[in-house]
Image 1 (cartoon, rainbow, N blue to C red):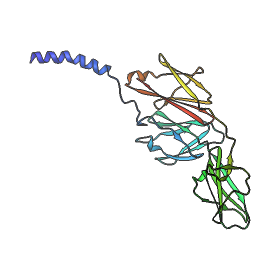
Image 2 (image 1 turned 180 degrees about the horizontal axis):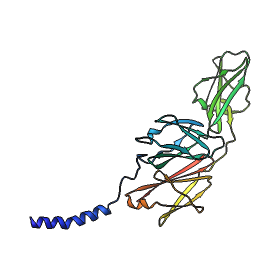
Image 3 (image 1 turned 180 degrees about the vertical axis):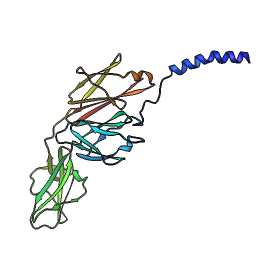
Image 4 (image 1 turned 120 degrees about the horizontal axis):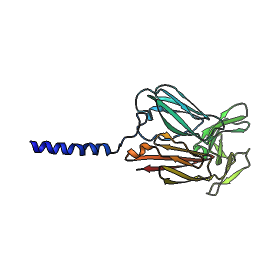
Length: 270
């Protein structure tokens, strides 16, 4: 019995030492259960389920960075609006129990395009093309001769035809055409002024407790450690939080944007 007590007393300090030195494995707050996925807006106004991010409990408040608006519709839904001419990337700040975590959002680069055509003496017009996945969609008659339909489209060129009273034809009001690759011709809808946008290249160097980034062709740069935004210095450095040293693994996430063309980087810190 005495020998067993001695062994226990000898092991106890070692056990305590091991407990103190072991790293934490759960670094996620009670706001988000994991690294929050980016919200990619498909239009200027969206409604998304906040319970995909906040696992339980009541949200104290929610706000968003400049260029966007956000409001709680109810306990489970949030409305997010991208204002005209806003930056492409924004940050949603979710507050609960005095703590804040962040979600990245990216506004849609699609444009609201109204296709309009004026044809006399027709009873039905449909449009079919790359903007409709080649499935005919009806146009709405707005007066005795004009027909319209709205689309949300990225900048670029879209081949199409119109179906007038069940007859497929080229658009007689549009002289732009393109070969369809199988010996035929389609009308061509030009949206915006498409140009080649180079996606940013991101390189990261770990120096002591900092990360330094080398990035070309960008207009926005955002860095998260887990779900928390990090401050970026003028020479493109971020300080890695001290808490990361007590963890088995954490993550640095980087997003660089160039006029809507975005590159992201995920880096594990161990």
